[in-house]
Amino acid sequence: MAVRHFIEPNSFSLNEQLALLDLADRMEKDPAPYAHLCDGRILATLFYEPSTRTRLSFESAMLRLGGKTLGFAGAQLSSASKGETVEDTVRVVSNYADIIAMRHPKEGAPLRASMYARVPVINAGDGGHAHPSQTMIDLMTIRQRKGRLDHLTIGFCGDLKFGRTVHSLTAALSQFEGNRFVFISPEDLRLPRYVKTESLEPTHQVYKETDDLETELPGLDVLYMTRIQQERFFSEEEYLRLKGCYQLDEDMLKLAPLDMPVLHPLPRIDEIKLDVDNDPRAAYFDQVHNGVYIRMAIILALLGIPNPVTGKIVLN
Ligand code: CP
Image (cartoon, rainbow, N blue to C red; front, side):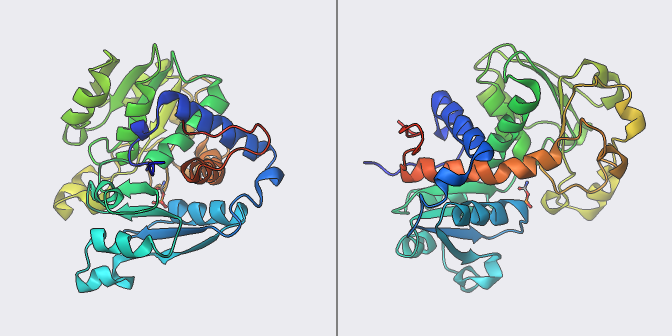
């Protein structure tokens, strides 16, 4: 059977994505039946860029499935620092591990890796492009909070130009009927053109662009905040000009519906003030919690391991 990879949200069909969410929900409620499904399997985490949540939650997911992990947490700690290519690295690591999670600063690097690996490759974030496992976490959290993934008005706020989680979640939510998208950012950090042409326009999604968060808050069903991505700016001066442009606090939240969850992929800097953390609408630590179960589900899906409770596999 052909090896499947998870490079973008639509690497999986919509039915496969929904099956993955269902599996993650089941494991979140009752993890015990899944504790030994990956006995004897190894996950490699190849992280060429910093991470706390993604790398540690992939490792936690594999350990909770009974497997083991190996890897590196920075290009300088691998032979990439001596000039080894991603292609050679994954050819090598395919001998050491059954599945690979890769984060890389260069857009397209995990896709390139998937062409040379003999085992499944998961894109754990590539530059300003995509972050599909985060997207599945975001979908799980929205579905838990709102009970649906369709007919929602979703506000994305902050750095929409470099925010890969925004690009992937926009693609994923465009698969569902009746969603409306409100993209809130400074002019210089607007959503890239390709996200509109590839995700929004083919399915005739309704969207608007604005720089005014406060005016939009009362009409949102979901708010997705993002950090200004300092590491992707070409000049420090430009970053300093734009940093701190949105700062959500409890006073601003008074304008928003009482059932509007606030999501953020984290890490945050100052775009969500600490006083929001105790508001029941704060959903960003739910996302962190869900991350482990989503990544357990991704590992099981790509390894073709059936759910022992239902007998079903996620990928067709
Ligand atoms: N959300 C996310 O990707 O966080 P990390 O950069 O810490 O992995």
